[in-house]
Length: 147
Image 1 (tube, helix red, strand yellow):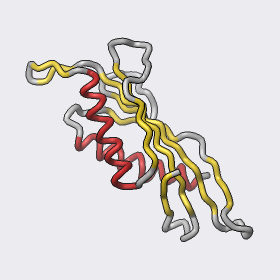
Image 2 (cartoon, helix red, strand yellow):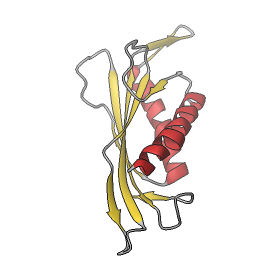
Image 3 (spheres, one colour):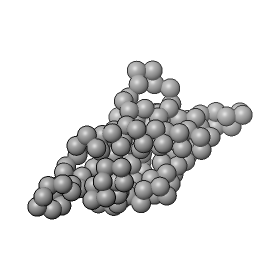
């Protein structure tokens, strides 16, 4: 199971963070937890529980099913005296997250736009990434594919 956690901590999350922060004009805060200081937009990213399965009878090849949940939260912003809607901001950030995972890893991406949120001043989108990691070529050449 540590293979997936290491991949998430050392590669997937840092690359996602850099890609979205670099490409979004709204300067989102990409985190692994919901920060105490809520300066929007915020994009908490969480690795979901991992499941392993052996591929052969020798138990030296494993496949790991993994999921990542990414919430995108935004409030209305004013940029250069122009009001930008929270939905527009959420959708722009969501597009960058989806682009990152689809173009780099070809994993399964499910997007829930306009997700239910308890605070009407905050808009929320949810992105769920699912995939499999295969160790058949060794730990230094992991294969990632859609679930």
